[in-house]
Amino acid sequence: MLGGMTIQRMDNVAIVVDDLDAAIAFFTELGMEPEGRARIEGVWADRTVGLDGIRSEIAMMRTPDGHSKLELTKYHHPAARAAEPAVPPPNTLGLHRVMFAVDDIDATIARLRPHGAELLGEVVQYEGVFRLCYLRGPAGIIVALAEQIG
Image 1 (cartoon, rainbow, N blue to C red):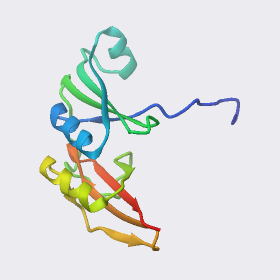
Image 2: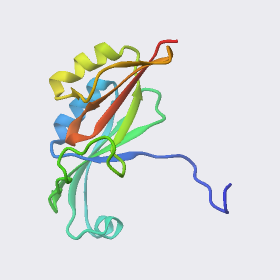
Image 3: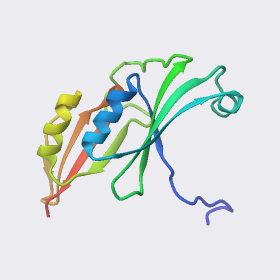
Image 4: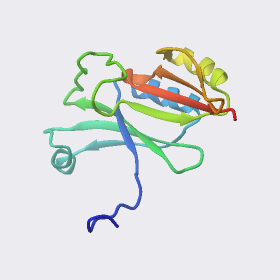
């Protein structure tokens, strides 16, 4: 307990995408499991998010261990806005990267390339413990991969 407030867990991270099916395919290929899909609209959604007339669709994706989730969100109304710049660099302020531990980084990259993944730099080794890389995923987000080697 810190300052009279506690949290139970981090429930999920949301990513706004323009192509929900493509994003689901990307994260499924990465190894996440689809958990459900739903339409979100109504006064409660408007009041929660602070936008009027929300019509969106979400897909929940779960990591194989069941501890982490991504909420992929496609806004039908109001339309999603592009970030400026459209493809922000890794040092842009705000949330923009999610990292996953993988068994085989090279095989994972090869599986994700047909889904639009592009390396930002290269796969590097960190102190003989990890192989790491950043790649660009759906909606321009940066997906980091880490393979433990030591």
